[in-house]
Image 1 (cartoon, helix red, strand yellow):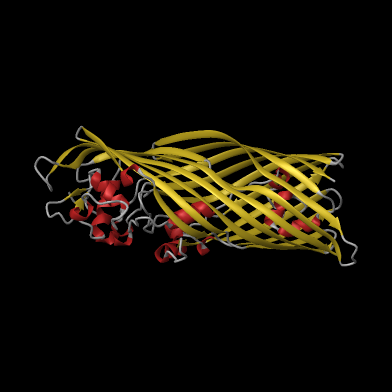
Image 2: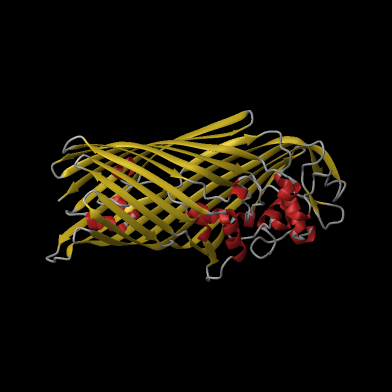
Length: 524
């Protein structure tokens, strides 16, 4: 039974009771490519252009470009398609979501000054992140089991059967995953009563399956101010208030043949070999509010050239997690189920600081017919941090953040061609590098997860291809955009154990989303 217990190296992989993980910090911090149809049709390359409701949230100096007041609303139809695949097997999921991504107003006021030509202000609502996503899959020919992983970590942390038997989730310092696995016989005590074994041993085979459903997102409400200095320098500042509501349902199950099952009749430490299956279901809802500040400038040294720079502070969140887990199992024909905390939600309050951002931009105006624009954005994901509700840092988790994540580079390119005074055609492209450290992304690091959610996923690169058109009629305008998104991630049922060469069950998850975005606006 050499595969039944993972060795002591897993002391590197604690299962914290209630704290958040580096994975959670990223899930709640990353934003989407969303906004008005004009902004999106040009790949979001608006850092040096401005004059758009969404562009103000990217570079606040864009509000200083306005010479007249503006109001607009944007509707987004998101057709999502996700494929999960492993060797010899794939599974597809699709869904369509309709949402209002942007509503805003800008008031432009002329000032009787030779220096400050205009002073403008505005407010806007933007859906900065949409978390709606669904994917599922299977992993055949398992070489290990989640039960073995949990047993190994429980052993390495020194928890015994006496610690876990009848343990209270609310008062015990033992990890929730260890208590749940013990109550559900996913891990079984050995004869000495001081260590546990998993269900997978020599001769065991089987497969795993999973499903992940994410809902909700991040809404941002912005108040912006800016001005125009001699039609050469434009400046702006935006204060943002964010509201987050994120829901996660995750399922992971295994069906094993020739599993090593504890024989209750013969007593502790005696096992029989037979069929075993179990299903772990996690429910999580994260809610809270945050704030941030954005600063920006746009320089127009000539009529044909625009240069932009912007800085976004982190968003400072106060968050609350509500969570619940159930474990259903069938060992040798005996079925039952257990749940965490007697069926009541666990609740954790904490604080999150998201990454800061820097954006540099350049744009060229080609006569009265065309615009070419380029943005580079750096997002410091390794600067994220977590604290408890009293402000004390989660030191180990913050170390993991710096270990797993790195700065992300985002490139945006866009162009517009004005067919005539009414009609414009647009196109753009955006590339986002992976924010994950290369060793973590390529399974050369142990990944620490918390509570009862051992599964995680890492994003690789993301690309957007965008096209659109705009039409003006009097003071009204209408813009339409088509956005195609491709992204690849890797799902892991639990962490690999690098020191032993133990790979975790995993799948490649590919997103291919198509979106139709329409904006109606009025300038006056």
